[in-house]
Image (cartoon, rainbow, N blue to C red; front, top):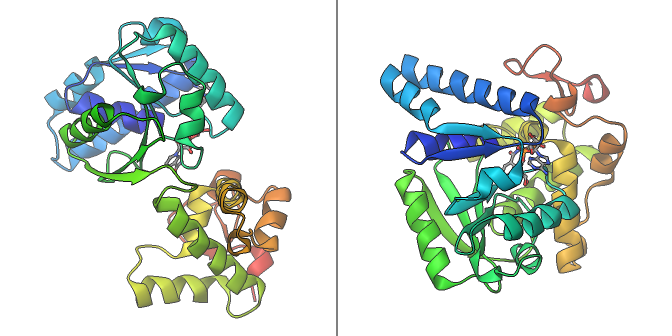
Length: 285
Ligand SMILES: NC(=O)c1ccc[n+]([C@@H]2O[C@H](COP(=O)([O-])OP(=O)(O)OC[C@H]3O[C@@H](n4cnc5c(N)ncnc54)[C@H](O)[C@@H]3O)[C@@H](O)[C@H]2O)c1
């Protein structure tokens, strides 16, 4: 997600400092940005000059303090782990200029909690981009309990300048996107678990019947089953409502290391790539 966010900011004229913990990760990030820009050039969405100009606006850093020292906005997109995010925001508060806005791309962690790890909770906000960032237009803008009106307005304007569509929501578990999406994915898994229908049948009903671009089980494999489980746990803990309880089949699959595309198998087998849909052996009839 971090490389996608850097890509769109740089494409629309912002000078970007891309920060990660290792040079290897940064090299992989820049390679992905280059590949995605090449695709845009070949589709004639941008020119070769636009591509070079975009890349020239991105500088890489492995040291957080140097990367943020002169910034007006930081968009954090590190691994989804609450302790890690709280540590990073403590550091950002220390190293970024006092008036710098600290945004996070978190999918599920409370913005209010992240803000409380800093001395500037009024300047902490959720800027939730969708995957793949260069393609998806939505940015869910999440206002924490203490986020100021001025900061919210600035981030809405910044999102518009990236030719995205910002939508402002309040800070409750799952925000809007995942509060609605994850129960749907969980219900699809429960439907499979209860034997109502198979993997292909469930996804086909939702694709052809509801005009979804991909079925919920395929989508879960793309998002990562571990990510789905962790967001459902956030909803379950945060609202204390049993309707968010993760399906035991999802829990079992994550425990078995079947995480979807990233592990090679979930509801489908992905060892051959992501083009063809082949139902995983466990779910073959
Ligand atoms: N993957 C998605 O579809 C998606 C969609 C929307 C939002 N998000 C959110 O975006 C964030 C990142 O998700 P992802 O899927 O790209 O995660 P990822 O685990 O694939 O990538 C995280 C990156 O953060 C780096 N990182 C870890 N610790 C760091 C630190 N201390 N300082 C700097 N960099 C560090 C890692 O090296 C890695 O390159 C998460 O908060 C996630 O919830 C993900």
